[in-house]
Image (cartoon, rainbow, N blue to C red):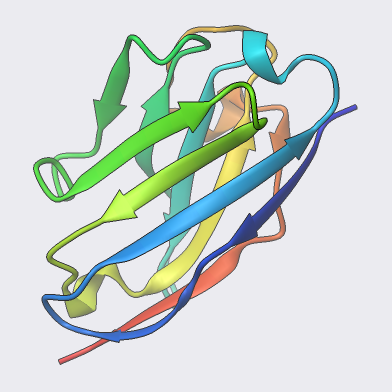
Length: 124
């Protein structure tokens, strides 16, 4: 079983930055691909970014490409989402998720474990 705990959310002004962290427990973190998803108010959960088990491969939603960076530290069992140039449309609950295999994916159904989410609010 993998448990995921997100942190780092908050209220920021447009144009500023935030770094989200996701701490994972369990022995399989270093072999698991990780992802960040978000759920804006009144909308469905959507893909943000994914990183493979070793950190050598990443993928991003077009809406965040060039502004957000996903990274991981397997020694610390932690995955990060660095968010720059935040926009009001980035406002959402952000979720960390883990796969049972090591390859990146943009599909919600490919992830077996989920955190409780952290709120990010961007004011204009």
